Image 1 (cartoon, rainbow, N blue to C red):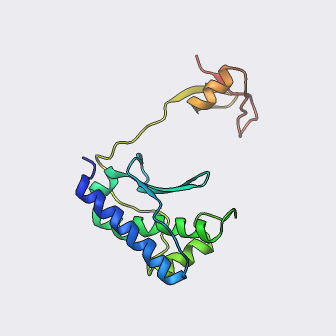
Image 2 (tube, one colour; image 1 turned 30 degrees about the horizontal axis):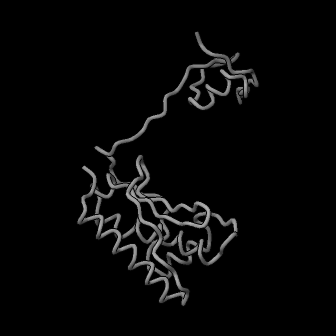
Image 3 (cartoon, helix red, strand yellow; image 1 turned 45 degrees about the vertical axis):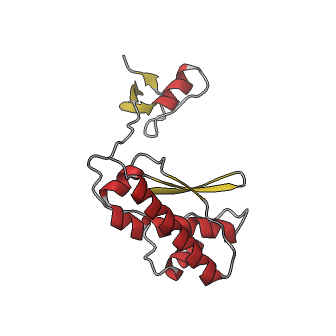
Length: 169
């Protein structure tokens, strides 16, 4: 089961606390970005910018499995992305580059990019694969690529023999 209302409130409060900490450390005014619990799959969190609005998306299923770990690591990780975005607007920076690492160090958190927590019971979306072949082997092609080839909008080549991929069967 995903986290409930009480734990969501804790995550929002922790997000606000990390934003407040960034304001104090960097002397830069920052508002709380929109906090959503709509992320699915294998990621615990994601910072997103759409136009002028920023949001932090959390995966309620992963938070339910490893609440304390995510409160300590995922929340500051995503807030650090937000801080970097606000400090360096309109700059194309590497997501986990030196600016992000510096904010994580200011937060007193290790600049870890991934986690190795068990994801048993977390709903995962699996992308369907379609069988294709070339002159040398079989290929499993994503639905997006399959549809592009079927509609004649794209051709994909084998990276080994440079043969055109054709539907199997």
